[in-house]
Image (tube, rainbow, N blue to C red):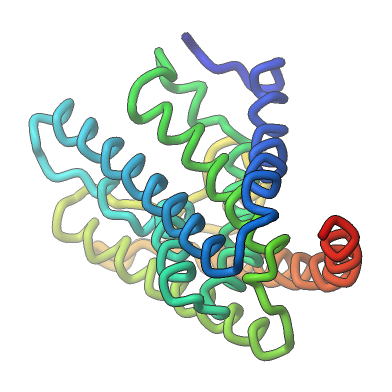
Length: 255
């Protein structure tokens, strides 16, 4: 079975995280905070298992040769561990990172799911991981927001921005380090090039990629992408701050 952009299946894919969020909320609304936290841990472990199975398939089909795609440093792969740590430690910093950064990135991967169109059959472990992995990242994070795991204030916003900028800079270095050693350049955090069919392609085309030895960098693309990321994180913060009091009213009404 193949995947087609803007088909009924794609629209169903876009709606699925919100349906899952509602299901999670209905299943947990009568539970205690600690029980909900443990439920979040279980959901996060399921996401990590899905990622591990995906990586296992990549290794097996590649005759166990090194493949940078098994290193979970891509934004959405990294999100699985952000959520797992957040639920285990009840870390407000990691919950904020998941909500303000990982959630929009995961939903963009659902909205612009061009990668799925390259699969001759989406019902492989890799295809299933793409579909259910992104669904769970978005739905679990939204559910965590509804259940008051997320605390949004100026400090959590600053912490999130700092972490995102630090990871972005590190990704540029890691991409080039692995590429200079193996000759195959990963694209963690899309720091080297955009995903085809996404708005980032415009930023990439505006800039020029310079090669300094084996080090590759597109400064204009990096700057514009970082600015876009700042805008998205800021917009997410503003949106959820507006929704926060309304969320409290709805939850108190249902209790």
